[in-house]
Structures are given as structure tokens and as C-alpha cells.
Image (cartoon, rainbow, N blue to C red; front, side, top):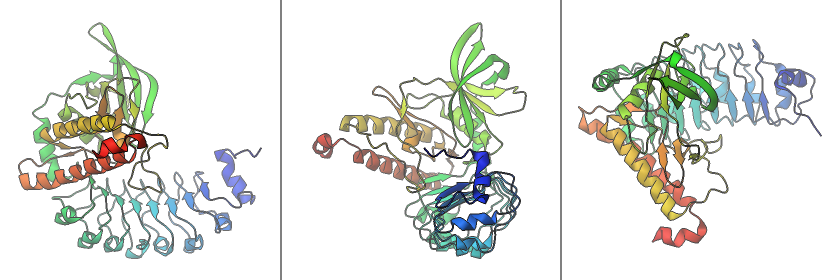
Length: 415
């Protein structure tokens, strides 16, 4: 029996030459230099994760890793995207979240192969025109930068399906976005052009503040990129109630600002097919932002898993996931009604995916408003263009669910 090395042993194993043949490697050791021993894996290494170190650059011959498909260098100290990335002939996914990147050289983009590009939470004032040459680009994560515009060349990104530009400096949405044939999931909250819209909408609602000291956290219910959700006991008016509490990890999530997510939940209000919200946390000792929500029934199960590295923009359904036509119709009806309720309240969900849907035989719930954006209701034409994206997301969901209808029911589904 071969024991998998503990994480702390990985660097030692690498230096001892004991990782020959590895296809994946993760190193997080406060590295300041790229370990040259990684090149000994050049014939096999496909996924390299160097997140959580203190790196500022990568070697100029990184392209020697001929099979490298996926590279993560998040939470390091890069101030630029290394130009060598553009020479990596198989690199399809690049993640440099939470660095201090101010500049991306035109040559740093592997235009022939790039599918998924993450530079969330940096200091970018511009992105390169070369992105417009990325014919395979499907997901682009730019939230939490200083962008005021996108290059006009990106009108050629005909494969782009998911775009995150929240928490930037946009004064308007780029016109070409609505001509992109596959754009489906868009998040843009926390920009100057929609901050006034957000404030106007939220000013019409009472936001319930719930004192932190009335909450007793219990077990973790789930964890995502933006925060951790706990079961908790809430004490109010001499009564106790079990609730769900989401605590945000930082001032910026993968999709945008915690403030925007909290406001979106308040605006969404109550609906049978939404999670709902009881209030926002007040008086947390460390100033952490958080939401208090109703505790959902334990029998509600997530419809699918989030996209994999391979599927990129499509959720992954369990191999044994089978639904009847009636179940599919029940899910689609509930999610459509939830989306229409959000739209009527000035919101686009922006992340309408099966992995954000919880279901049982009696109930279906659309969750996670982290990617929600505020609709410019005073501009009906723009609002309609934005909502066409959400309609496309619903169409994709319907296609996916049709694909998991049990074969014995296919004929009735078609009828």
C-alpha cells in the first residue's frame, strides 16, 4: 500500500525525486522561488498549484512543462502576469487571484488554448487586447480590480459564457457584451454605474439587523469561495430558532462585494423557491459581514456539482442522476418563478446553475445570490438585454435536465 505524502512532505518528496510521473502537484510553503525540481516532472505534469506562497515571478522557461494545462498562483505577490505563460502550448486554465497584479503583458496570454482565466482581486487598470484572440475563452473572472473598460477586441470572444466584472470602476456596461453569442452568466454589481441603482432599490426596503451576540454557531453546513455557512441557534424575544448563518471570508468574493450580496438577499425577500433572509449580522467582534437565513429542510439536495476543470462552464451531474419528466417540469417551473420574482425586484441572479439549486420531491430552491446584479429598471432596453442572458441560462438548465431524464421516460418527455 502506497501512502500519499502529507502536504508538508510534498516539497521534500519533490526534492528527493520521489514524485516522478506525477500529473498534479500542489506546493504551499511560503516559497519565494520556483523550485527547479518541478522541471523533472515535465513529461507528465498537467496541473500545478502554487497558491499561497510568496512568489513574484515564474521562470522564463516554464514552457518546458509541455503538458501543463492548469496553473494556479493565487495568493502570492505577483505584480504582473509572467509573459512566459503565453508560450505554454497547452495552458487552458490560469488562476492568479489575490495578488497585486497591475499589468498583463500582451504576450502573457496563451491565445490558442486559454479557456478559463481568473485574475480576481488584483489592481488591474486594463486587460490586454490579446484576450480578443482567445477563440476558446469560456470563463473570465475580473472582479475586484480597477477596470473602467474592456478592450473592443473582446467582441471576438464568441465562446465566452461567464464574465465577472463586479467591484471595478465601470461607468457603463460595454456595448459589445450583448452581441456575444454565448454570454450567459454575467455579474457586474459594485461598479459606479450601478451603485446608485443599488442604493435606490435598497432604500425602499427595511434591512433587519441581527445582533451577533444572539447567535450561537453550530456545525458547518457548507463552504464556498465567498464564505462559510453554519447552522446556528438564534435567541430573540425569549424564543430560540435554528437558522443558517453565512459569514463572508473577506471584503471581496469571487463574484464581487459582500455588501452587494447582502443587499441582493434583502431585495429578493420571500418566495417559495428562494432561500429567503432574516437579516444581516450586526456587532460582529471582528467586523465580519454576514447573513442570517432560514434553515432549509435537510432533505433538500444539490442538483449538481459545480463545473470541473474539464467541463469549464457546465455543471457536473452525478452518473446516477435520473429524473422523471414530471420532476424536470417541477424544477424548471420553480426556478423560472424564482428568477421572475428576482427580476421583478430589480435583480438578475447571474449564476443560475444547477449547482445553486436545491431540490426534494416536494420543494425546489434557487440559492446563492453572490453573483446577483442590480437591474437598471430606468433603462428598459438595457434591462431586456441583460435579462436575455438569464433566459439563456434557463434554456441551458432545461437542456441539461432533459439529458438526465431516465431513458424509460424519454418518449413521454418528448411528447
